[in-house]
Length: 209
Image (cartoon, rainbow, N blue to C red):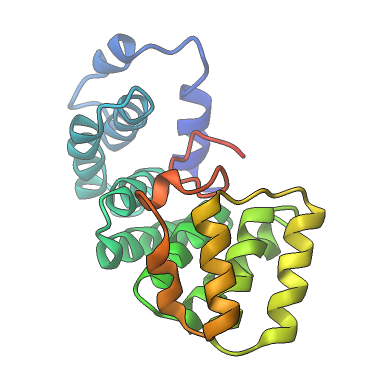
């Protein structure tokens, strides 16, 4: 875990308020972390626009701040800006290779772009880091079906079910279409934004499954 991520998780204890975070001096040595902390708090509070401004300020100061990149990637993913979301999550993963969320969200972006090979690679890393991530196994099944790797796909879907992952109807339909058509574009059938499709489609660092 990167120092940036560790500090963010400590800072985002339930007792930390947005008003307290705003009092972090802009010229403090940890200015980047201050922006990342405020951005994460604002994102949790539903203020995505303000959060994005803080997160972009963080990565401008410290391009290696994984926490800021992964949350920025989540915002972009929720706006269907898939290529930008992939890039942001790739940067998060480069800064903190053990950050499973970055690999997962990068894969979701790849799926929506019809890039099944890249999605399989990212999801493979996500399940390696989080072996009980049912959402990752479920989406890996979609990507594998798109590559016509049917047996592996069905095994991943079975793992997801064993882990009690329950996809929403739109995601379940995406898997059905991917199995029937062997086509990565089946994910385009998902309803709503990627961030609202499934509990496992986590795109905020501070949220767990």
